[in-house]
Length: 162
Image 1 (cartoon, rainbow, N blue to C red):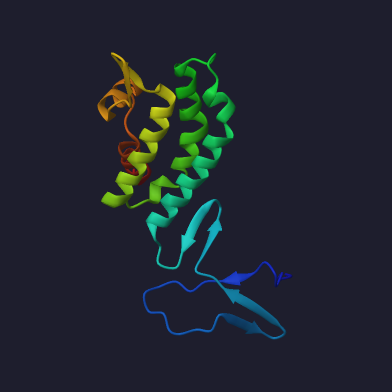
Image 2: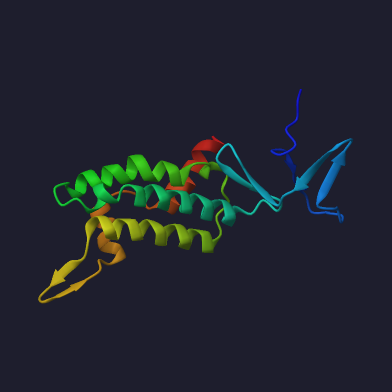
């Protein structure tokens, strides 16, 4: 087995962390210490911070969302198809690894805000008389007619647990 010194790093996990230098030496090779890394698409942190994982998934979903800006802004594409695009292209990116998430109230709020931001852009504002306003959350979920993201994460966790 050959070890690539430039690509190999190490991380210390656990609650009892002793002071360790930032480099680890084995014979003629030195390895750098890191606090987090991405393994198989999931962010691994020293303290197993779920919020960092969720924020990483939201950032990746935002990248895919803004990569589809031409489709999102197209006037000739029906809202129904834009919702299908959201459910098939963006939601799986966001939900990857959700079976292992332990959601705090702040994480639930963050996921809900992100989902509503996307739904508001899909469904657009509503005209009341001469003024335009953003749709209320209740209106969004009525139009979307699916379970919200937090409930979907909970269902996914229960399905995974058996």
